[in-house]
Image (cartoon, rainbow, N blue to C red; front, side):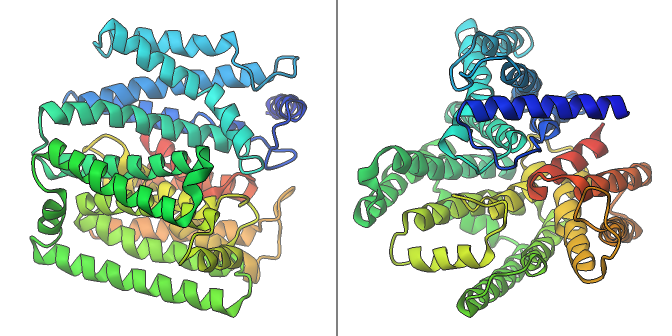
Length: 470
């Protein structure tokens, strides 16, 4: 074990040296987070492998892409270990995952030659060279593992979106989950398009230009596209879907109260003009738990729709903050200053990571996932990480070797998650075989939480999901 650890640290040193010599600013000085890079691809691959014979085409293609992302991750690391200073340049080694993926899309996915080659080149190049470009354009925002995971998540979203939307054009969705998927994909694609346009065209960054662009794309592109894809009004469908049962209405009102509490608390802390401590920031984690657990148990499709739309909304809010656009730009910047984490830089990634981490299992293309796996993010960062932060900061006296995290905090992380799991199991929410596996999964993930320098909100949910799925 000591030999493996030593070799891993040597790899990190070599890769960090390569990034530095290429002018790429890494978020940390001595920790690359190599282990985090393949987690997104592995999650997509295992989701498909664990699916029964009723898997959808979307699940098949994202599963194939997930395997390709793991290969891309290894090729990227191999590229960065080479002895030259041109890491930003496209390299021949990046063609290997593209060739592999093109072959898999052709033979396993039964796609045509042109589609297979196109998808293979897109996924293979973005998941390798695209990681380097992201670190170049957003210096100091990511470790290598974080940049790889984020890029791979974006690649999977692009693949699933441009696979699903043309299919729905020819065959309008019938089931609520399929309709919700189309709305979420178009909504996130709309927010991504606004962000990319503003990043590349400075003339769009003024208040008038930005709001005209946003309203114009929403009114003339996004909503008409949804009308065509759904063969009905998306706004009418959302209204009918949300208010067609008493249970959904009660849940919606409950979520509105949670949202109001978050706004009041966030505004209060901002007006105090004091920086929020780690324990105070964890209040938003607990509010997320209060939102997600009832949603996952009672109305997962409604939660899936709401989480996707909230992610798109968060992205637009972040653009408003970065561009400092009136009337909310100044207040959003003050809020960012009050809650900024030491891992945040140009972009306020921590809340986006929180949203994605808690929702990630819900977004995977399968309908056969049990509640415990769906709660991977809620357990790890909503409950465990919050308990570790609160107990550790107040009563943590014994530190782990080489870490500023306390043993007391780790114990609280384990106990809080197990109490939640066994409490829900008592009401028949989980199956007994998974309970045994969950104990080992919780302990492993809690130990990782205590020692890693990667962003917990991004790393822990995927790790827990993999532990429960393997």
